[in-house]
Length: 494
Image (cartoon, rainbow, N blue to C red; front, side, top):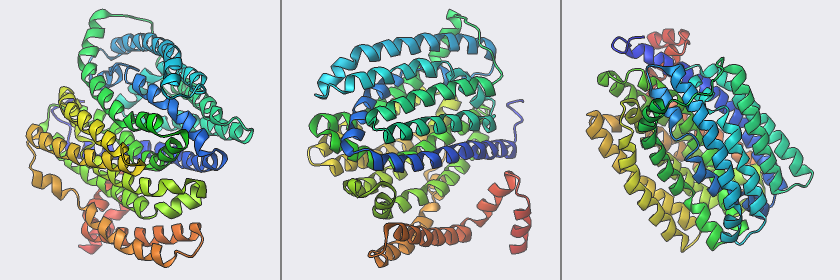
């Protein structure tokens, strides 16, 4: 397909269709994850959940080096795809094995840092996932590059079912934090195997040094941005693990888990579609600008009600899904939901920067944001877990300001046009006005009833408002995804 002739409607259809497939896989997977999350939260104590959480920062930090940005470089690349894939696959296997060795080596140091000997074997076994994931990472990148996200459902669901099934079974058997470890290993293995099944590509062991340099020149900025983002995002776990105790870390992770599952991972899932789609029109700045603004609007239409709804209904959510032992996480969850909402507004500008071959912009943004985030979280940690959540929120507001300024300059798009895409916030205000009174009126009822009633009231208010102010946009997305019968409805209203 020629880069010079791709119409906006064609790209929009590809984005909408593949975002639909990707979100279907994500939705099914996360639906299962939430159910499993609820079950495991009832089976494990905050101390046991916190023990597993102590091992995650080291894994998160080393995952920065997981593929050196080679997957993103492959998605952006327009020529010699098979040759580049073989070299990237070979390098990934080597990197994965090295990272596994590093994790095993540093496990005693991490256990000493957190004053928790039980972290050592847990971290060592989690390190094996680097090697396992390396065998499927390039297959996943090729799948994303070709925008064949319908196939992604199989490895995604396979991973989710196996990981959670084993974790729940072992938790029932009394394996504690180890149930989560064995679940992670089994899920990673299942995903890699299924990726080989659904992506018809057999790699060759090739190490082309010139190809490595080409891929690395692009991928380095992606890796550097990911490095600073990951360190900043996981800094709260390190601070809590060091200054507080396992129970506090377990409570904080539970508070963070639902915003992460429903919002932050949603943004990542959508980015997996937007980046290759934007890359296909990387030389058409007018088309790229239009599609960026369209995606901004629709992302906010999706994310805004989730974040505001969770923030309002945090109390019945925790009591109904997780149990009263997690009540301390309610206030933290509310703040983190608003943090996730602010984060979502500027999230996908990075996909445009990568698409136009300027991943270095991400690094330039990440450097000040990195120090802002660390300082904010550290200051908040001196007060309480809620203070840490407020630290994230404050940093996300400053990050949004920086990202917006850079986006306006690089993409030559006005701030007014960006703000106009945030019409979902009007619906969010109505959602809050509809849901909060119901939450108060039902305060003496069972948590499940409170949750259902609050969600219903908020959903009704939001849907009615968005249908009134964004009807044409909603009908357009239904049309380009194939629901043409709604087009007739639109004409009827005209």
